[in-house]
Image (tube, rainbow, N blue to C red; front, side):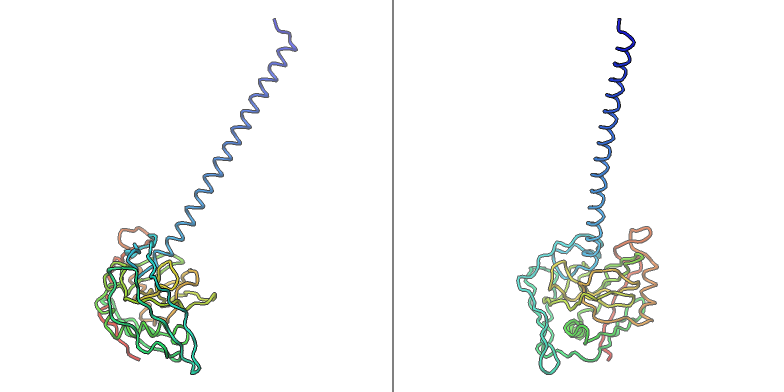
Length: 284
């Protein structure tokens, strides 16, 4: 029969084993929790990246952005990369509009802007964007984005935007845009040329901004554009080409208030209130 001392020693050994098992279980729980938190962080970062890329992607056959959010853009970049603009002695700039050789079947050939070697950098151009929901006056700034302003004006003059739908609405507290400019309405259409972005590290997207969409690849600006109706947080990768007037912002606010198809609360997709550009015209 074990003595009292032996029983005490056995009880101490049993208690020690219990404490060791508990410590090991606690260690496993901490490790599993760390793995879970890491995985969640990756999902959050990836989701934010997909939102930005999908929302502002465009003009590429592989870009799955049916107004998309936030679907990833799997673009096939053009084999030629446009060069950044160069400044001439007279103050004009040379823009380079190169063919989009991605094989995207949703591109529309309307030629390229004339005289790209002497693109003006002074003044503004006013466009009247007449939609089924009301008129928006767009003021393009040639000094900030001469190549984008020249392209936007040229596409307008060619009737490129007439009869097209604004295929995507994103509505959140820090990300509110209506995306337009695709003749196919699929989110992957555009002209048959691409050109380089005109941005700086200080480029921002406050309410009332007109900016050019692009794919995730550099030098992939085309014809799609987006209009911000809230101060929108984006990296400085999208060319700011101008601003929307107050009457136009009222139209955007009304469309945003209608919400997104299939979304409860903030969402991303086709707007519940359809927006069609009936006519886009240069008016000044």
